[in-house]
Length: 471
Image (cartoon, rainbow, N blue to C red; front, top):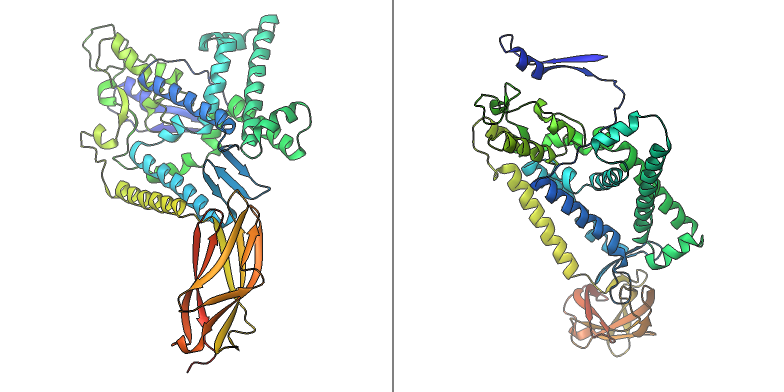
């Protein structure tokens, strides 16, 4: 099945018609893409960024912090370690806020500069590019790879293919083990894995993630971005006429020609096709904005290099908004970006507040519903409370309970002072007594104070003290 795209007026030249009219095969089988290597400012930024991100991913689990792994998502013990921060299930709001901020950052950047996340920081892009680097190391340049795939099988071809896939498997396995190393102690995982002593879960997930990496980065590559990733589908809703995208300047480039250096002709595009050859998803940016474009900017570097060679101004392909292409001014500050920016700022502020005020204990106070209040000796009123305390510190701690809010409050119970191990929950029952003559209301707010006698940290929680009668 084919589809004809024709936006060309009848009066345009045949060269222009060739640009705007083409046959699109909707069910065409995938053809392997051989991205051409390119040098330039954007390629340098991208390559250096990918190296930094890969280094962070692979090295971070090996970093120690206070005699433990700095980043560890300890699922069996239900706690996440992020340097000095320990996140428990009770602190789920922190993880929720973090994910919300990541999403809003993505929306904000997309509204401003399009799919820069896809081109510079997406894991699919990072590992695909790493696999392409290994492929070039084993098989050579784009032309050499094409020639190798076309030639019949021989010893040289087998050697190069085996080398490439061996390097891919090593990187994929390293990726899988590192991924599992974020969830279990990586210093124990590595020797256990290679001596077949690792747990079934650790082995399974390491191999599963290694296999997924090998499949996605080695074989699927741009197909994942084109057909599986939902971001490419809904990104259009975040674009507007002021969003910076990779754009081809048709006013400068058309009609295309085979120009020599220094020739003064209307069209600067010499139809060298380098912008297509360097594209990792295999599109022609001269056909206009396309959902497959990941804004990697490699076509910009390739085109700028050609413009330098023919002594033409750079920027035939560049970051530009639709408004700029129509001769209008690009507005970076607009309702959409302001809205995303405000929401992002609020989210970051709330996250910082939650992290700063994270409590070292989780305290739950429940009143004895069978006896809300009762008389006690010495003209006192007694309320009974059940205390549930979780020690969220990394050390065992001793605690004392007291109360404030009414003069002369006393706390009694079998364990008003107690010790709780790290990560454990302690339950106890206490009685709080107040002088009846000092109770002016039926319902009086009080504070329950839990002091960590080991560190001196104090935690205060609000509750209510009830009188026997409403008189």
